[in-house]
Figure 1 (tube, rainbow, N blue to C red):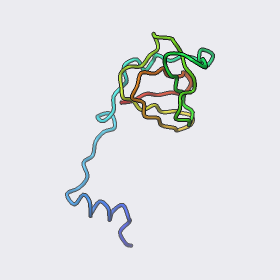
Figure 2: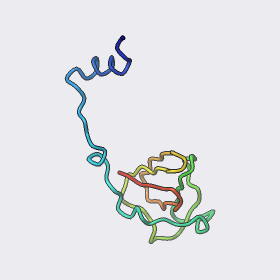
Figure 3: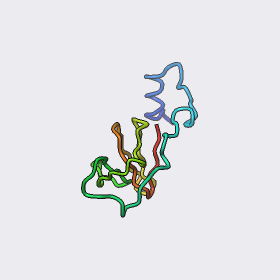
Figure 4: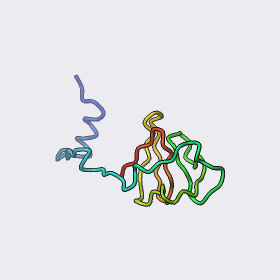
Amino acid sequence: MGMSRIDQLIQELCPDGVKFNELGDLISRVDGSNRKIVKSKIQATGEYPVYTQGANQKPDGYSDDTDSVIRDLPVILYGDHTNSLKWIDHAFIAGADGVKLVK
């Protein structure tokens, strides 16, 4: 049986092997990641963008709720129902349903 494409790439690009890292060593919990607002609190306008787990990369609305703002940035927002990822590098508010934040 021949060598797989991934084996070829490793041999070509990483002849000394590939370093293994535990996922927990590479990511960390985001300060304030438990602060989220429910859908009924998302407005058409406001000071802070609100991102939910949807595939859309644009804000899903806005809010003025300063107690819910995430400032530990940048973060990756992951939607656990949609498997969507968003890179966010500005103050924002997370929508409650299915949103996970990691750094």
